Image (cartoon, rainbow, N blue to C red; front, side, top):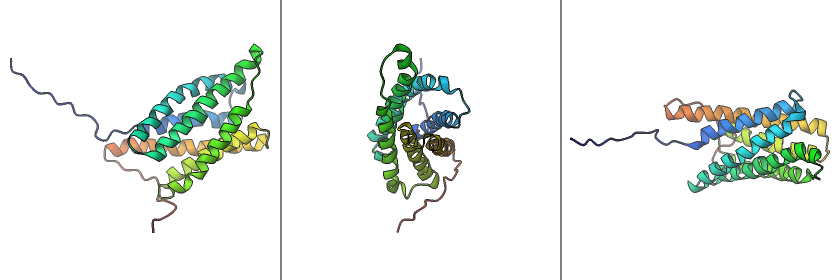
Length: 203
């Protein structure tokens, strides 16, 4: 029997970034809806807590992938997302939902502190994105404003106002990530969608 060599051709330059951007956007939209008071707030904490723990694994794997390939900015952001949104946020929401029912004491300060400092981190690294596309820049800025606002609202600082500010910030971050995720997938097939020229130009 004649042997034939079979070559399998896959997608060239496959990247986990676009898919993870869309997955991130899918997490942002429910947070916005809840912050606006349009959802079932009583059941939100438990449902979202479970989802966030799943995202912890996704964020960490994605972060490690980017760090391994030398993309320190994306890798660092996803690792912080894993810790803040996935682990602290997920366990925090589950604790809010379950601890009162079981008579277990829980201190939400842990999650609030984490959110404030994670948000400040995202805002502080914006200079590193000054030459990135407008949507990349706005996405991280929206996340930074949103998470910081949620953390401060959790401490009782203008909760009615900052809760909605946080929701709007997360919405901006989610929508920009959704668009950039689609653009990243289309780029593989030769269709290029612009993310906008950078706010700052290289000298």
